[in-house]
Length: 239
Ligand code: GLU
Figure 1 (tube, rainbow, N blue to C red):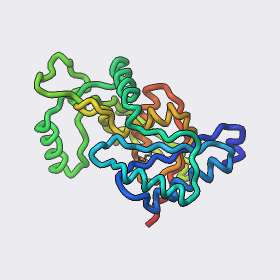
Figure 2: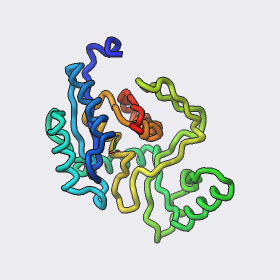
Figure 3: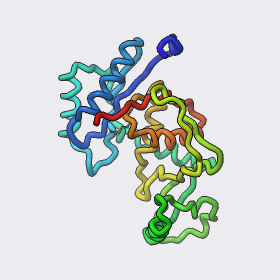
Figure 4: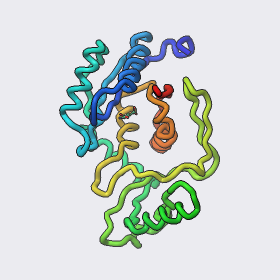
C-alpha cells in the first residue's frame, strides 16, 4: 500500500468530539493516524469537533490535548475548531440547495412520527420517505422551519474501496436523504466533517469501523460537490 502511494502527500487527521475523556479507542485512532503520517513524511492534523454545543466542554478539550501530549503524539499546525467553520458549512449546504442537489424538508414532528410508526409495523428500519424531495416549496407550511436534506441516490449501488476492509458495496436503496442542516440553521456532523476534511486537504481518513456507514453517506456529499474523496481505512474496534 505504501509503495502504491509513494510520492503522494499524505495528510491524516484526528477529529475527536470533546464530549468526554480521551478513551483507549480514540487514543489508538490518533496513534494510527500519527504513525501513518510520520511514516510517510506526511502531516498529522488535529480537529476538535465541537459543533454539538450541548455536549462539548472545555474540560474535555483539555483532557484530549493532555492525553495526546502525554502520548507524545504531536500534531502539525494549529488546532482546527470545527465550530469556527460553520459559515463555510452553511455556504456548502446552500450551494447544494441552489444546484438542486439538496432540498428543504418541511416535515413536522407528526409526519416523522407517522413514518416511525409505519416502519415499526412493517418491522423495517425508519427511513424518511422523501416526501419533500420533489414537492413544490410553495406548498410549504408557514409554521414549520425546514431542515435541508441531501438528495441521495436511489438506484444502483455505492462502493467503498477501503484500505483495510477492501471493497464494500451497499445497495442505494439503503441510503436515506439525511439532514445536512438543522432547522435552526446549524450544520450536522455529516456535512461539517466533509467540508472540513476537504478544506484541510485530508488525503487519508483512518477511523473506527463504527464510521463505515457514515463514509457511505459522506461520499454522497463529496460526489455532489465534485470533490475528490479521501482514501479511508476503517480499523476494527477494540472489544
Ligand atoms: N468526531 C467524531 C468522533 O469523535 C469522529 C469523526 C471522524 O473521524 O470522522 O467520533
